[in-house]
Amino acid sequence: MRDEFFNRRDFLKMTGCGAISIAIYGCKNVAKKGGEPRKQKEIEPELLPIEDDPNLPRVLLIGDSISMGYTIPTRNLLRDKANVHRIPENGGPTIKGLEKIDEWLGTKKWDVIYFNWGLHDLKYTPQGGQLVPVEQYEQNLRKLVKRLKATGAYLIWASSTPVPAGAFTGKFPRKKGDEVIYNAAAKRVMDENGIAIDDLYGFAMPQIEKLQKPDNVHFIKPQGYDALAEKVAANILEALKQAGKLK
Image 1 (cartoon, rainbow, N blue to C red):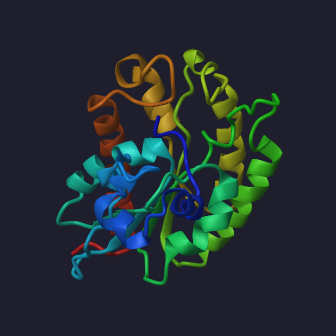
Image 2: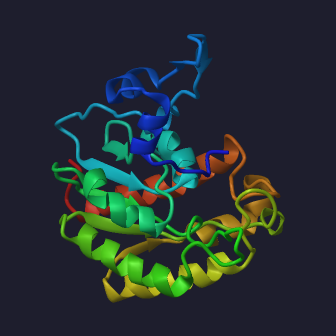
């Protein structure tokens, strides 16, 4: 399940792979004890870097596995209009965002940043509580928004997509309805900062049965992610127009 995120340094220590090997080959073959090769999962194509067209504006997607699912179709919809990058991993919860945000933003200019955190924050731990309680989630978002605003990019917040009733089982339990609470907290932060909101929750909910799996937060391929991508791309395109970045 792509819902997990990992610490890259720990992964390097665990596998013994160099950063170049991971970037190019996805650390496909790692020696077992005794010298036999052991296959490792290749990096998903949406996580691989893209090459910029210097004549086009630069867009950054930040988000979890839902974001990963709509990255490539969004990129396809905005071909010849924008360089659509994304962070090179699952964005996880806000606590991971605070740790990684400077690395993800890098040093180059971004024209639009489309971002979300939430579905990881509201997960329940084996101890029974949520990974990041909503009060802390709201505080974390304020810190992240402050950092994102410093880039000068046009910012778009995506509301977290629905949690189905069947998601309260398995390795990463989530409770239906918690996303509404977390989205409300996020909306307070975005409204305070004048940040545009793309309501993916409101978009997906009326058609959820044909777009989303019934037992976890992920969407059906390809129609679920293609539908999200159309909404995401339209919002990014409008932002680029408002920012005067389209010819």
